[in-house]
Image (tube, rainbow, N blue to C red; front, top):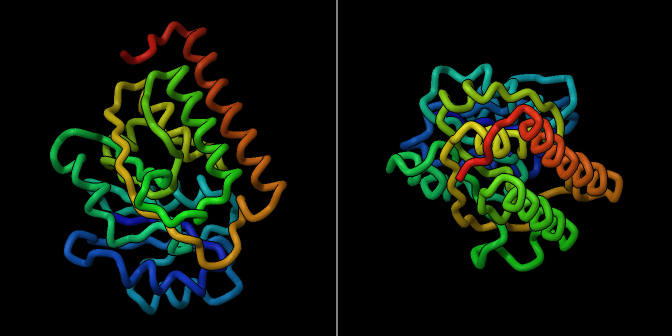
Length: 233
């Protein structure tokens, strides 16, 4: 199993993230770094991670770079480097896949396990809005679009993911649902991130990401409706 961690200036937290990964089930860790200036790549490398330098910006691009470089895994896990999600909970994500009940699992940050206030109100609102739109248009019942997720590697390859920015997180869900992939949501805990968010920490980032994601959900729906793709039951 491979773990892909996109980073940009996460020196304060990356060591905690890497230290908490369950060593008995993780076979490789790929830290995909985007022009960090605080020593993040050096810390990750010293802790045994394989560091990939991705100078082109974009969360989705970093995830795709890590996926392409993974060493023939059966499952790929995606995890942020800010220690807001807890790597020790990785078995929670893997259980539905191991049991044969899911091809993709999504960690929901909106349950009772999360620390109150860890997710800003505008992020909670935006995620619930996007999840509600997905439920309405695609019939998939989810509550969150969190970054902590796992997927069978063969399914990821089949989906031919292409989004390079904010839309990558929702592209998996939309293409997977339209392709009949089994997607299961599981509750995970969520804590205040270490350091400032590159997206939710600014008004521009929040509005930009929200608009992009919502418009992508609608565009995919209209495109496949025009093509005659039936909505999954």
